[in-house]
Length: 476
Image (cartoon, rainbow, N blue to C red):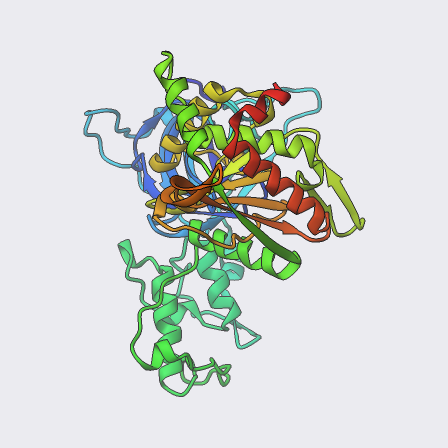
């Protein structure tokens, strides 16, 4: 176990999980206060807008405090926990697997923590510097030391703001029992005095639910917050006016995966002038080809892998659709690679894993990668990197038993191919009526990157490959 050589209490903050994510929800704590942790040991499982992630701690020592309850959201940079390392850890009662020692008393949330920068040229010590397993820097973050607040600091910490006016708390007030910076921000935005609340968390800790309850109660009593006698008039809090509130409906927060999907789809419809074209195709020969490939031995080839192979061949002929629009530069950016996203429905909602360099993979390799990413999606183990960076999306909504759809483009991409269910239908084949396996294909595209002729040409080529898989041999 790695410790800092001089004995320090180090604060570990929620790291930047990549891809522009700014917050995460605590799903499950994996350590308790008093536990001994090793360098890079996962300490908490969080859910971002893109994936479930186990966050490892870059320090080894004894956990002295945790910040945030399960179910609460924390912004990037907010404290997660503190770890006593080196000499500081030696004098603390610790709990290791089955030791049953008592938990260390958590550090007070109001005590400031200051960074102690190392001298120039001196290596930073005390941890790995990793923010996720397999990622991070070769150096550890700056060492931190806890500074006990003096009387002046404590007085300043007890000073709050009510309705925009500063006030000094009663000497007996002490620090406000709040850990989450989100709770503080919510109260501040609504001019709510946290000292008026009684927390429902452990040892009176004020939770986000307590603040929201107080705001709802204030709105129900004429839109005013409760204040102590002699304080300034409170700021009006708008009363709820939605029909759902009036009828007693259930409110479901748009957060996590659902919130991310809502934001992305709204932005897509707001920014992209999309259009959709579609065509019916006879997929009988494609199904026969897949059956013959699987009968030849070796790993089974999936239908979605064959459709992906058709997509990459079509994008090679019509590269306009494998692009994005740089609105600031007013330029269309065409990619020389195909990172193929595919829609996957999970218990956590709709996610779009990305197959990197799909154009360079054959049907067997595509099948394996689709299977790996699908399993990771269902288990909630996809990394942010596996959910971003796509250049084109394949959406097989036929698995839901529907024939057609008008897909919304996965912003900032320029197009999405939708595939309906493949079902027996009457079809004119070689001049005679026959029952064939028919599928509807639809293409939604950004009209800024191409006109209807290009989109129609792409879709027609896809349909030709579905009807006559031998067409693909020209691109092999």
